[in-house]
Image 1 (cartoon, rainbow, N blue to C red):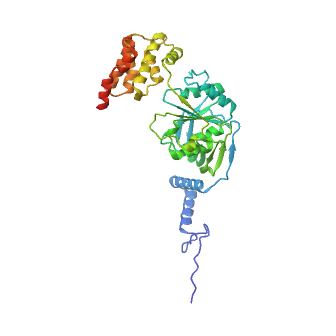
Image 2: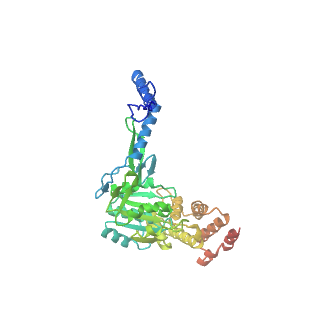
Image 3: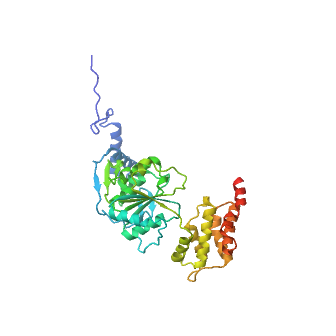
Length: 391
């Protein structure tokens, strides 16, 4: 009885059975025929070649596991010249910010500055949380600290769509200068800050998804490092890292998880300036005449107290001032123009409700005319507001 016939293996790949009466297997024969065609004609099937190269690169990224590497940054490893960082095909504009040349105008409304300066001067590394409504000076204070200590910063505006790869980094496939398809690692924003000895500013940190907040555990505790799992577990560390986190407590989002908040060294609250300080800011920062600055500050203060839900800030006051400015010739103080500017810069922006807009205009008119007292202005329009809420 004859034994089973032994299957011949392709001598080229050594895996697949070769075809009858042909030296190679089916796959190797196709490769051999294509190579012969290219050698004979001098032409290449560009589409097929590109697909093969891309597949090989992707497979390489999936299979290669680099040895764990620890990168410790004591001094900047590179100077970032651009104001735009690129992660893959996504560009983050104005992420890298140089220290301001001129001293930013900052008013320490809540008496936080001396404590923050003492922390920065006596600690190489720290994590500070700034909590306050929009326009209370959180970002302005960070700019002032940048100017004083001459430190660049990388600012990250967090949204609910922020992904871990944007923060850590990822492999990307692209063409080099010669048109060849290559695979390379591109650092994320946090990794870039660590390697270049930059401060790090995380804007609206409570917008971040809860599962991504864990990225900051090792970054905010004594390790001051980040682990790049997609790069074989490489560890990037900077013992001099300073992190500023900002958040708006009125934003309709979940609070920070306790594990993250426990790693923050100190928390500071920021509030809006009162009428006296708002008047001083307008006069020193924008050279607004004293009487006009007093009227604007009083109007802003009354609206803030009368309409708490509108969240009016100092930014609205500055918008109002801009509409009154005359180039190289001071400010318009005529009552009609002042009220018209208030309407377009504040009333129409703060609410779409006509009743609320009418109430805002009434407050501004009363302040400009100086006819009503403080309590009368606060009580003015209560009936209209109640009708609006009932509707």
